[in-house]
Amino acid sequence: MTKRVSFHTLGCKLNFSESSTFAREFSEGGFVRVGVNEPADICVINSCSVTEHADKKCRNIIRKLHRRNPEALIVVTGCYAQLKPEEIAAIDGVDIVLGNNYKGDLYQQVLQVATKGTAKVFSCDCEAISTFFSAYSTADRSRSFLKVQDGCDYKCAYCTIHYARGCSRNAPIAELVKQAESVAQSGMKEIVITGVNTGDFGRTTGESFLDLLRALAAVDGIDRYRISSIEPNLITDEIIEFCASSPKFQHHFHIPLQSGSDKILGLMRRRYTSARYADRILKIRSLMPDTFFGVDVITGFPGETEADFQQTYDLLERLKPAFLHIFPFSERPGTPAVDMPDKVPSYISTQRVAKLEELSDRLHRDFVEQMVGKEAEVLFESTMRGGMMYGYTGNYVRVKAPYRRDLINKISRVKLSAIDENDDIVAEIIE
Image (cartoon, rainbow, N blue to C red; front, side):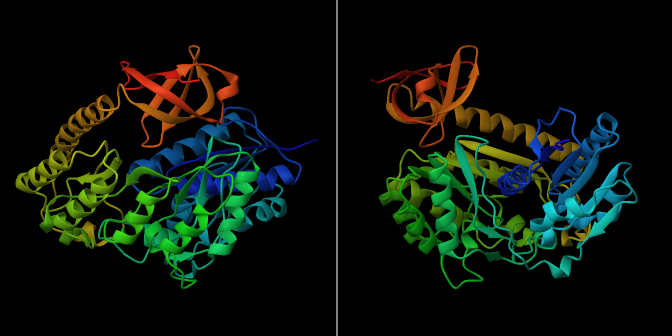
């Protein structure tokens, strides 16, 4: 009887690329992939641990899967598995806990542990993380997530990623080009370049992130590239100028800020000032005026006063990014921030989140309104809702148009005519 396997991905685009690679391995091995709510014989969870909420979400998913599939083999990997393997192993129903260093061996581990029993923990020693698991997604969406880098050497005061993912490392450019060519051969038109600290690419191969961008731009069949996230101190003038000059690199950047207060940035152990951050945004905008900027912000970091928060708010209001990803500070065991004084009460942090959410909604609406009346190129996806299909412009504005099967996974020229109640733009196809 053919075994059924389901995949449950939490967290970042990096995890998504890895889960898609797991799925290909299982499919090639004769397993049948099923949806997350369907009966399964094997359940694979690729976990996140960026906040306590992420840990809790993973625990809830494990318990739900065990209730639905009491005989299923449950496998947990990812950052939560790396940081707290024994905690996960103690949850009823878990059979395998696999650390990030041997994530690439997950398929083989499942084959070897074919029967349920005492949970087995493999390779969760944080000091031993050194391997690079190559991964990219296919067949899941209209765009592929290509993992180019893993790990981080920065050790920001609030973050466990260095412990969960290890040191910064990467695949060689030649290997990544081959993977991009495979994506192109599958028929996908867009690649999102992803990693933990993407701009730090080259630590293990002596290459540079700019070298990688140039090589990927030469791959036939891929029409669009996006950089999933890049640190402000690593986005150089040369990278900006190359992206502006290349028709393949979209005017869409995700650049984490975390705080607009230099005092808080110092306490966080970030590697830039608010002035340097603003300089990078303005440099990009000078060459690509229609750029969509996504920004990460943390509220309630220890020591953040109302004046510090106001500096963050004022900087964001001045720079006018298109979207904010807002996180209330979450204490992570083992990080320096846990022992810092002047903790911010959670209710104050929550109030600050609400203020930034209101700002984000306003900035996003303003950005989208500027697009109305213009023409743009949209890559349409296969999903149909209410007779409409959806896609994204090069600068990441979501667009909808009447469903047409012949437009799926094609880049179409459209006229952006009006905004709906969800801030999507209604488009007219230009034949």
